[in-house]
Length: 91
Image (cartoon, rainbow, N blue to C red; front, side, top):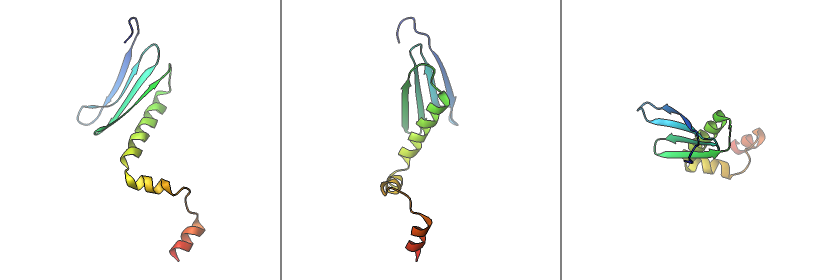
């Protein structure tokens, strides 16, 4: 931490009392950390970020990384099938 820098922090605790997300603000920018079990995601931003959006993105990142192979297979095919294509597959 630089000398003369000002910081503040906010945390939210989960059921076990362990922080699930953390925001630390410095004069130069902010650091955001979100945890989910054994996984952690972090972001460093400039001054005055929209905290809610940063936390939303980090939580989404953790959720998607935890979905595993089924999520990779679902997105690997490209576009979704339309109603006509689904009906043809079922016939």
